[in-house]
Image (cartoon, rainbow, N blue to C red; front, top):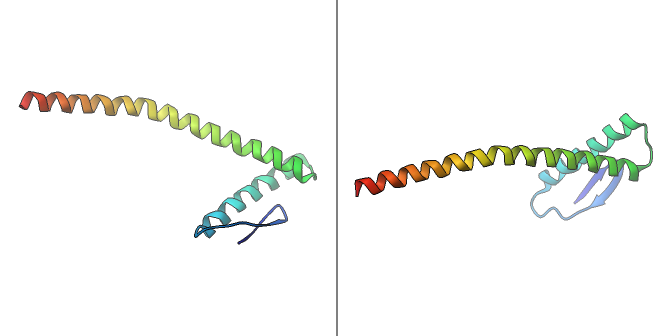
Length: 92
């Protein structure tokens, strides 16, 4: 399948995920265009690197938030499991 990012065409293998790949390409294209507009940069390699840094920052931020949520949630689940196990032991 053919996708376009920042006015460059790429042939990629979609393997039944064409819509998802188009969405990813549109996202990367949008990030690159935002960087180019904000920095007034025309060098596509520099724009791509800055866009990649922006996307990496988003990814790291989301990962950190997920870990902040999962830690306390995991502890609560473990506490609930422990309570259920104790209740089951008492009924036996």
